Length: 369
Image (cartoon, rainbow, N blue to C red):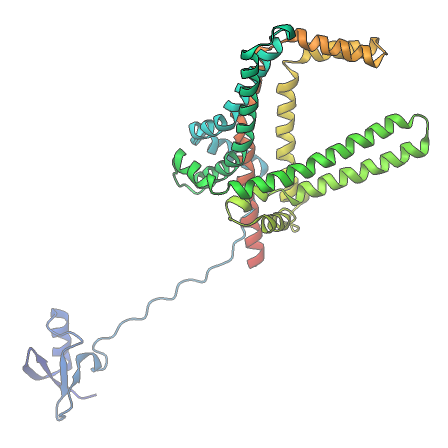
């Protein structure tokens, strides 16, 4: 390496100077890599950046290797805790979404109750208007249901990620998913309805079988198959709402990915797998619905049971039950418990979004390992 160099700064030459002087000029900011430079005894100009060991950039330290850590899935208790945390954080927004479908339904129920309380011989124009109003409110509740489902998914996902989204922005985004959600709603709940009708038909076959062992055995076998089909379909469509809204997939892709994710986690204990947790969430919600439905109707149900035990003529029994129901009329406690159900209904959708994120993270970690 030459010992002495000449540096040109703004068309003026400085030097020749030794390497230590060049290093001093560099530290003072007087010498930058773009300055022309020429070694002593040479006519070839280059730049100061070409002087060996003068502008040396220390190599960046290599980052430590990233270790693949598989976080354990949330326990079922933590899923419930996260569900209630999200619901409490955005309570007024979820309450507004509940009103979106609950208010038309409540108006329809009130109008229907008013019509039933009106004597048949005094039906007039007001009764006809009330009937039309009840029907319109029922249709509005059904039409708004896909928007409600999509909005719960969007609001829960944004809250889960720590983002904030306004109520109107949530609705505006949810409206875009109405066609896809509506189509899948008809398909999913239509299949569940057909499976339920099939089960009721099998039960009727068992009751009609009388003392025929073969017919009873055949009906029970069909019932087992029906229960298996019901459970299998439930698992396959466990996450259809999340893939339709959060992943913005089409109907066929949503069902396919839902089935794939619901059946993932085969390396986990059975009670930590997505399908089992999803079934438990639905079971808890159904138990809650049955509880708040039975409590206000307990006296009426007990009356039904007593009449069913004492009256053996089916026609007379139906007349008695119909008369008892009309005499029961509008029940404030039943209405209050129904309103409570509507207010708490977003909890089920929130819990499935939390379960979806937890299951998807676990499936992604397993796929990378």
